[in-house]
Image (cartoon, rainbow, N blue to C red; front, side, top):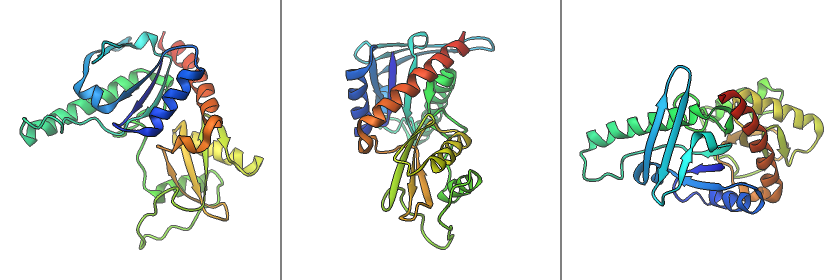
Amino acid sequence: MWLVLAQDGDVEARWLADQLRAKADRPVELIEAGQLVHECRWEHRSGTELTSSRLVIGDGTVIDSEEVEGVVNRLIWLSAEGFEGAPPRDREYASNELFALGLSWLESLGQRVLNRPAGAGLSGAWRTQAQWRALGRSAGLPIVPYDSGLAEDVPGEAGRTVLVIGGQVIGSPDAQYTERLVSFQRGCGLDVMEVCLDEDGAMRGVSFLPPLRRYGQACVSAVIAALTRHGVMGLVGAR
């Protein structure tokens, strides 16, 4: 099966899951953060040689790690804040434990996950826009000069955007720029990312939760290709 993991109410994830179901030859499950916290029975075993997991979602759907061939990961956090009957200190402790459990589960799925966890990020390392621009410069991309005296802009609010998925670029203006964007993607550790450009093509920032519907069927095809490729690599590595 393929999984689409997202925060509660993520309409982009729901759209993608529907599109994948229409085109894929396997089950596609959309799982939101709230389900993992409130509607899930977890069995997660981690060892030096073998890690396995078996999750049962509220409706009875079983997610066995051996049957997961690909994951689109848009998770940001897992939190116990919904348990309002518990004191704040207990909710904070439980949130940390849930986050650690989710982090371990995602890490155990290895290369099957698009946007793997990194450090304290469930779907990749969090960076400031200044750090993103520094990485972009190292990949040869023109960047918008950073001014620490200004508030950070919101990626995608103005200018142009391109989507990069598993080495495929949707919306790039030319071949040379495409090569630099792919190099940038590989260097920052994300598999799915939106790069935001100004009117002259200089990089302003990055989003790892892009509005997928904006890119239509080209996005769906790129996701399917990446899931298929990563699924093969991940299952071989898990055995």
